[in-house]
Length: 124
Image (cartoon, rainbow, N blue to C red):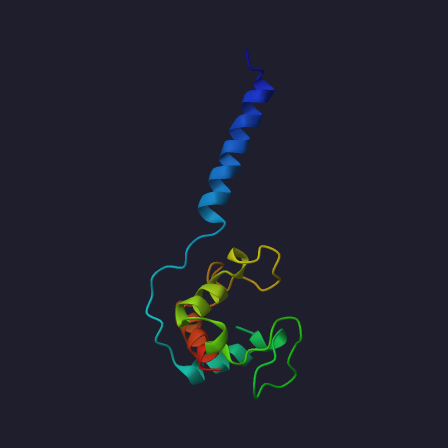
């Protein structure tokens, strides 16, 4: 006969598995990725919004960071704009230890700001 402790332990393990498999790597919702490059640049450079410049070297940016990779030659590094969007939406999918926050998944950016940033990054 199972003890109450064993039953509770099993239930917690099952709940954890369900929680992390369903929610931890939530897929990016379907959306049109036709944004505005200039609006995306403004968000990427805005320290109160996207703040991409804090961690990445971006052409034309002032006081760039050196934590993340330089945002140059994006179309040679990513096969599609959708891949760039997925990376910005939730970078933990490819690297759970990454310090970049999941801008889309956590709602850090509005959907419009997100789409605009994707368009801007794709243009680099």
